[in-house]
Length: 352
View (cartoon, helix red, strand yellow):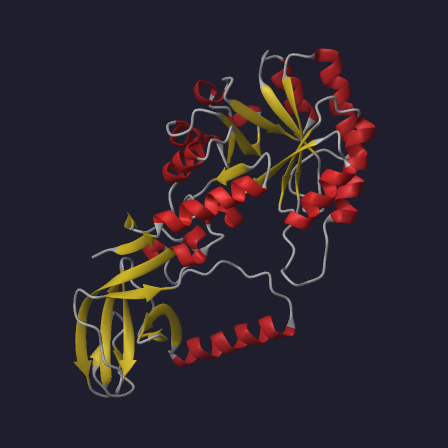
């Protein structure tokens, strides 16, 4: 009764090596559910790639990652005195992100602590303003104590094919970095395209770029990854037959298929979408209409076609409706599942 992720190991590792070889200074991002592959597995893969630094999302992810990776661990969430697990974070292997003067001042009292100063971008999530960055560098020069590792820029993601570019913003931010007199010429960047990285490298020859990458690295070759659900039961049904938790009636003759994978795995849970185009809105309206009628397309495919949920997914299993004429798979067979890896927790990962 498993939702299983199958990884074509040779193909996946070849992809990882290709990304490493074309992105000098690469810093793998390993956070959350490990992009569906697990934090420990990604940390071990980073070690095998011979990289010197990884980035995790929170301090609580450090122990699992550090158990498989002996190099530097950068924490993307800014350091706060009130959430300081001291026994974990104050070692030579950890780099803290700092975006407030009061936090930098507190860390200056811990000699040897490694920090990056985050410059606020148009995301407006964390970081110093241009003036704040100058003040931070001045404070560091006066107080010392911490080991400065450079500046971090966490940029928004741009829609593929939109024609937009980060370069106008990045150049403004780099001007602020130069004006602040940051003495360490390392810039840790997120969400820049390959062409933007190349352009930035040619314009700022005295800086070392450290691209932080998650999705493009771990999930960049989706053909190397496949999620499949086990068929747990198959029931032939006639129109009007009652089924499920809510006592719904079958709309026509066919089969009910019970498969592994439910809300506990992230199946049927949808993250908010950022789509604002007319087509995106039309699709949301269409999905809402299907839901109101009791017909919602599931991520499970049978016979090469996505099938409908018979009712909302259960915690660890889902019920699908196959209309008459569709040959049902046998109990014990597996069916393909289309998932969002960052919100899916599989039962088992198999390297093939």
